[in-house]
Image (cartoon, rainbow, N blue to C red):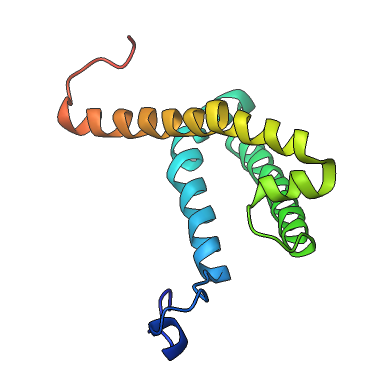
Length: 137
């Protein structure tokens, strides 16, 4: 379902290589499930005080994320050029804002996301590799 055989046009070397909505959805869901779902539930439920209230907060946050995702989809359909968020910033706010976004994304956003994924991975692997190690440090 996620991949299909190359069409004859692709085999001839045309530039018609495209990712579909299934690929994009798999990337987004994998990123969210791979990081946020394993890191934040304990904190959310601890701050809420009860499981029911925590599930309500979790559901509202999910709806907010859905609205944000639909806004991104609308912007992606409205801006007809490649480049992702950079193209959206350039189209809507101009080249200086696109440049600023690209640099902030490169120096802050991407390293922070990779750091969070690395910390999450290390926490879960350390439980298996070092089962008697104290987590309070």
